[in-house]
Length: 64
Image 1 (tube, one colour):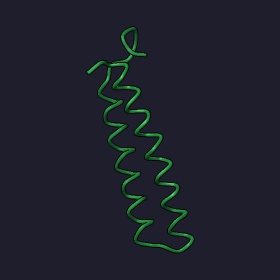
Image 2 (cartoon, helix red, strand yellow):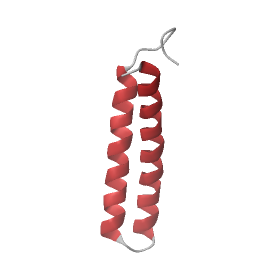
Image 3 (cartoon, rainbow, N blue to C red):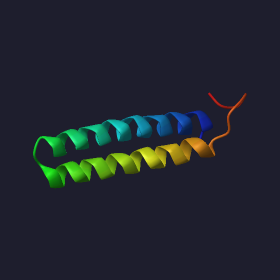
Image 4 (cartoon, rainbow, N blue to C red):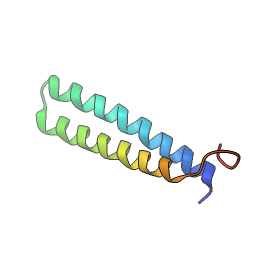
């Protein structure tokens, strides 16, 4: 996989994950606990996987 594409995918996963985590907290605060938990855990998982992928790519002249 191309390094630039991998870094972009990782950043996208991190953005979606952090947004989902915030939405999960909001959903839990306003009522639906089980669905809010699922959204929160899913968002945290996406964020962690995105962070892991971003950390595995090299930086510098060959990065983006």
